[in-house]
Length: 325
Image (spheres, one colour):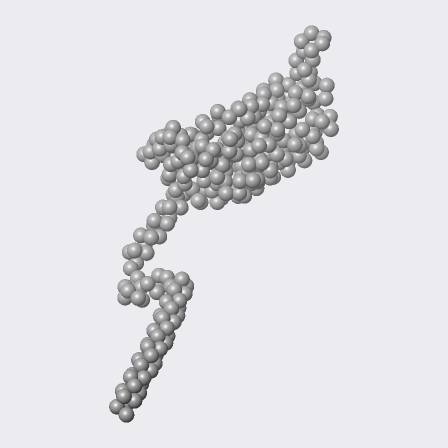
């Protein structure tokens, strides 16, 4: 009997111990599940409103001074742009000038092209009121461009662009067209038209040197430049503009006609600018320079997004220091 009682007692204690272990395991599992659920709920709430949740947990009330400092830092960060490996400070009123300058420039450029096409198609470019309206819109467009370029132009990038063969050739061809219009004008308005086209070419080429710009504005200017150039090619191919005008003649065998030379200049300008216009459409983030061969990044000055050009960086740093003085 004594032996049986001891065995029963041991068996009872063993069962009790095993039952207690199972209960403890269940309690620990429930506790882990509760902690996990609580953590998940806290994380969701913090993601929804991280600032207010943090302040509630820490018992800290919002500080207006801190919020003001954060807002001022954000505004200062918006007025900075990275060019050729350096952070460049932008003008305080640049956003306002860009907002209205781009709108006025796009509208005036569109109306200027419209009046030029109407005058050349319907009146052979000889209608004075239409030409005056064309000049007014062109002047307004140039003034708007100057508003955008003011304290928003990088001379370092401009010098980098002037090292490109296609940029130099486009400028030389534009100057040649202007010279031809002065020496052998189609009418009294031809020199002004040649100067306006040269101005359009220059503004379009050096749009790469703008520190801050918008993609919509670049697309509008690029498309207008392409349409104007194509129309000028069409005008000297299928119409009677400059027919039979001899630019200069060397003997009886060498005759250089104004119509064919200007048409060749316009075609070459369009072909040289094709690469830049393709980059304009392809580069949606505007990280690359349009007219720089080798796909040069604006931020670094090299063909790599992460490797900086030290020489350009030093020039940009000195330019930034001069602009801040």
